[in-house]
Structure formats: structure tokens, C-alpha cells
Image 1 (cartoon, rainbow, N blue to C red):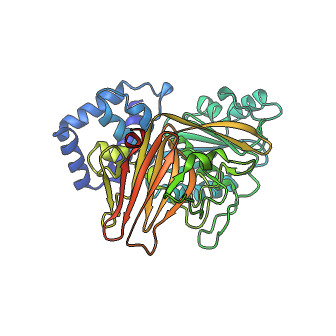
Image 2: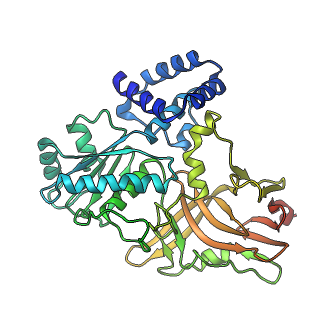
Image 3: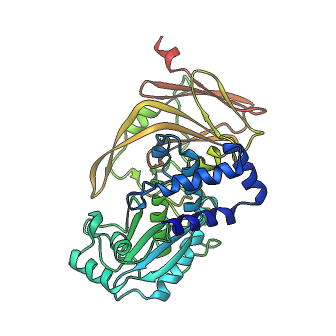
Length: 414
């Protein structure tokens, strides 16, 4: 365990410059030596066999007294190593190496460089293969103890790896290409397409093995699916004569097939395109260690009863969100999958020049649902109101200043 933690600290040390590390140490605890003692002492108490992801901000916010150690551990995870384990006779080590190398760049690009791991391909050991085949005689199960990644971590020496992804040449019982849970991710029945991705010419989604590996690895860092309502990538959200955009009405009119679970535009967790990049909330979520260590400012403007301005001049702080008092439930219908209930914690506004991208966000796994855009182009000033259930947000666009958000929910109730 001590060797593993030393390796994690080494990866952390190699990523940041001397000046950044000194600033981090000084700001976080006021003493370089105190920090090292604190971190190694806390790491020595961690039982990695029952590890909760250090990059899971929802759990880390509840952690008492060890935010510093968790932040360093998360940075190490984001710049560490992932073991990519191949099962079955139909997948060669060369094929797995091509896909793993390409998945490296897809994951890094899709997270804006915030996750830049080394994926190390290897074939499953004989004992791992035998155990997998015994537990999965016909197809791969969703039961964690039957997953190839879980079995590989149990049967092989993978202590030096932050996470494990397995690739098998069998179908998943319930269908689909991937599954992620805790420290483990599995990819099923996509090994035949391992051609490297050309980001410069790729103009539409096609799930190569590298795409799926990178996507499932994104789940390991607590990124959920970026979904959308049909046409929301370019939809201008309609308002009534009073300038009110009723999102509840739009959401309640979701028709069969209008909800697209993997179609969030230009995103690792949605569509994979030549312009793949994280949205503002994904990037903010991934950067919680830098915020905890005072390396990065908080770029998030929470909307409350006070007016909050997102100025055009401050490009690094370009999004706001309204947190619901209780999760918002919506019902989606997908052909072949039936009815599903989805829960979201926030209404998200991301400013993109003279337009605002509106989404719903689930905090627990950073899942987003794109609803559409509000366009303010060619207007010196404009005001609209977004309503969803009992919540109302006034959005005022000022061409020389930016976007002014105000929570007016209580005003409207009175």
C-alpha cells in the first residue's frame, strides 16, 4: 500500500511545476512539511480495497478533516494509470494497444486535459479468463462480482493502477456497449473496430472501441451521460407574449424517442465529434481538487435571491445554476426501453457569447440534459424569464456587460 501511495504522490509531483506545488502547499496548510506529514498519514489509513473514488465530490464534501488528502489523491487519479484488460480469443494485444492509445487522447480531449491518464493494455491472465468464462457462460452480467474488471483486479497484480477497464468479446446480457461501477468499467462486444480516430475529419458519431473505453472511463471520474431533447442542440427556446419560457411545458411534452441519452453535442459523455470538449459544469466538477487547494478560483455563479452578473469580460466564469430544494423528476420514454424516471438537482445556464445554453444537471454523477438555447444576438439589452415548476429566473442580457441572473421565485409567489 505504501508503494502505491508513493507512486501516486510521484505522479502528482511530476504534473505540477515547483512554483505551483509551493503555492498549493502554502495556501492549503501553510507549511510544506506539515502537508507531507498530513497527506501520508491520512493515506496510510485508507483501505483501498473499499475505496470510494477520491474524485467523487458528492462524497468528499461529507468527508471531515481530510479534504486536502482527498484533493491530492484525486489529482493523482486523474494523471495516473488505467489497466485495460482484454478477455477472449478474438481480441489481440495489438488491437487493444491501438484502442487504448487512442482512448488516452479522447479522454484527455473530452475533459479539457483535466483527466490525462496512461492506459496500459494487457491480456487477462489464465485464471482471470477461466473465472470470467465460468461466471459468464452466455453473456456478461451486470453483477459486479462477474465483471471482467472486478475479476482482473482480484486475479492479477493491478495495485499500481488507479482504475481497471475490461474489454470482452461477449455480449452484455441486457444489451449495450459498456458498464461502469465504482472503480471498475466493462466494455462488451465492440472489439472488432479499433481504427484510430481522426479528430480533424470525424464529423459524426461512430462508437469505435476507443470511444467506448474513453466514455466508460469518464464514468469512473463521476461523469454521467450528456443527454438532450431532440433538436435541442440548436433549438431556440420559445417564449410566450410576456417573455416567459415555460420549461415545465417543454419537458412534459417529451414524446417517444425525443429523449436522446447519448446525444449531448460535442461531448465525451454524449456525441463524440471533432470538437469534443467538456461543458462548463463537467469541467468545474473535475476541478474541485484545484479549488480545494486554492490553485483555481471558483468559476460557478450560484443563483439565489441576490442578483448575479456573469460579465462578458470574464470568460473563465461563464455559467450559473439554480439549485432545486428537492430533485426535479421528469419522465422520459425511449423506444424499446419503455418509461424511465430521471432526477435532476439544478437548472444550468452556460453563457456562449450572446446566447445561453440551458440544461438540467444531476449533481451525483454530473449527468446533464440539454434543453436548448436562449439567443440574445443583435440586441443591446433583453430580458426573459425561465420558469420550471415553482422556480423562476429572470435573465437580463446587456451587450456591454453580459448576463444578469436573478432568482425571482419568491417574488412571483407573493
